[in-house]
Image (cartoon, rainbow, N blue to C red; front, side, top):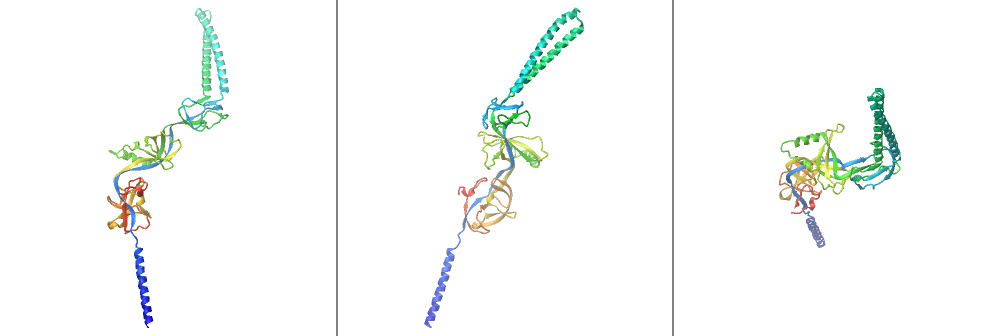
Length: 388
């Protein structure tokens, strides 16, 4: 009997020990509040940019075309180098045209001799006709012969001048100073005049031109806004941004130089051209880039980082820091994008503080330890910002 009582007492002690141990373990596993980065929403004026795809051109892009036919005899430049205006680029074999020059010189000499003879005949006939020693018919014939010789001489002179000009075309020189490209022909190639016969292209790299298109609807909206009295878009054409194909921002700010005279009926868009300084020659003709033009200015709007917004099935939400450091899930209405942020049209007000998110452990009512950080639109990573 005593043994049974002792066994029951030992069992109760073991059971109470297990209960106390379990309670201690539960106390150890108590979850501490998460430390979460929190920012205060910004209220400021924003200049919203529209982005358009454009293509770059040189300040001048001059095609080199042959003006006479013949065989390429020499290339006198280094491809991809800077050439000076007037520098010899190509020579075309001049033998065929030199033959025409010689023929024209012979024809001119012959016509000059004929002119000299008819002039002498006319000088002899005129005084005799005045004293009626010769008939008027003979005088008229002498004048006609002289005039015909004079016309032939002038024609021969023009033919010789034309042949000499064509001979000069056998030496093709640079029309401007600029960067020359890869030659489309080699020594021994036969070329002939024509718009489709392109030997090379020279680009003046002083400034870069970028052409881009704007839809007719967007053009009409911007045009009407721009022409309002005291429009906030005044002067936006003087500060155009450019993004390269690797998404890097080109350091120079450009300006719009002109718009085309018409809407292209095939595309329903109008072409604009912007000019950018190109001191390092980074912009080359043919690059595809993105042009940023301020198309709207909004006053005193709420701005928050895009990374703070949670989107589910078309519903946009943020975690707002409430009383006692508890998070409150709130539905918002985002407007247009601004750099790496959203303009908020409804759901937030000045002074609200929101969590940047980034953790799946957050939920409505979560207790957190807020870590307030500074943030500005365009900031790459708010977590690396200076802590207040």
